[in-house]
Image (cartoon, rainbow, N blue to C red; front, side, top):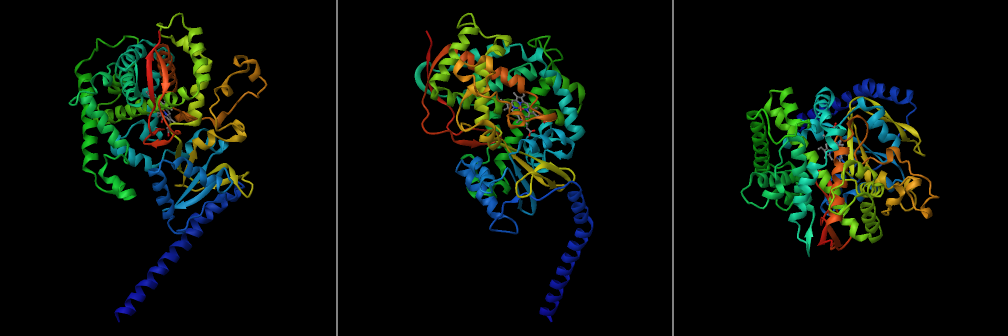
Length: 521
Ligand code: HEM
């Protein structure tokens, strides 16, 4: 009797599943097939998994690669193993596309911008730590955040290098100049944090001066921030549970989020209680006062502020770390940079102006090249808000459009895109700043090369309406710091081994940038 009723239940459930599937095929499925046919779509190559149902081996493979610091290469292999620039796959019942085709990237980020969201996964995961702000919202909410920020990044705001000089001078004072080994990664993080906080808030958090004091609020904020952004760190007790750890309750994570919130709440309270800040230059448009004039919602203000501090600290210091990892390994590039800096500044003590920086074409080429090889966001993704298409990747030769159903994720692999030999040439895997120079700025023996016009194949700052709003500020900052470091120090590399990925919210070299510094005479 019991057996009979179990069979009945099983049959009923099977009928329900089949009926649901038939209903889906007749409604959504039929609509999607029509849509796909009308747009001439063909399926792209498929990445298959041993577990055909959920693709669990994709998750375990990803986790293993993350732990072994080779997740960039692991994802690239999904494309190269299939000899394709766009593939589709199914993981955990969801559809995922992966592409390194510039035409597809342009479509997602610009041409069909309105068809895509930054994705529910990102919104959910990041909001839990930094709340709802420019990074974690879409549509009208995102546009509002962006409108508040825009005036802070206009040229006249970015061109004032006195702020950069004050903080970079402090960095140079604090670095050992006796040739002992120093890892520049942490000092760069502190410097970026000091600069971005003063740039946005009118007041620096003084991380370079206060970080070594155990009980400083800034130290606590940065430690908490590091914990939250690096779920794989040794400090994270859940990390020993592997992938499952990300879903286990983590009391320390909660504490860290609370500390970050308190830190930012204090900054907001100070701003609210002092209507005029005497240390703020009158010509500077600051983010926090603009934000507080737009909203009375203090949780919203806190989240926007956290979003901005995240944006401003990590990406810039990651690029600086990669630059100083590579620089001592390339003596010819190093020498050419020193000579360019000397030719554009009157004396080694003179901080460069914004206009002088703009003239340093080789320095800019070097920064481009390091960002090309090591984009600090090596892969990114968007989620389709409705049924839509990608222009390329379908059919056996990958030239037909591809149908993308509502809800599917499209990951675009920035590192793979930046290293395509058909775009950058056979030396795409080597560091060659000269490839970025205009013909007139090249040495005679370099001139016959075809000028590089990568378009959507170079996206270290993303592109389209959500292009990094801090791009010009970040580049000015990076150029300024490199110039001041090269003016001040003879630099010797102390890193052993190749560049190795360390992925948190951004990606940089696992061992940082270890150097020995001696003051230039
Ligand atoms: C070299 C340093 C930097 C790099 C490589 C970089 C890169 C990026 C990238 C790739 C994105 C797109 C993220 C996405 O939409 O998925 C982005 C967005 C953004 N970046 Fe940067 N960034 C840098 C520095 C900065 C700085 C210094 C600030 C601010 C002070 C900043 C503020 C932002 C903001 C607010 C967004 C979100 C824009 C939006 O969604 O509308 N970034 N950045």
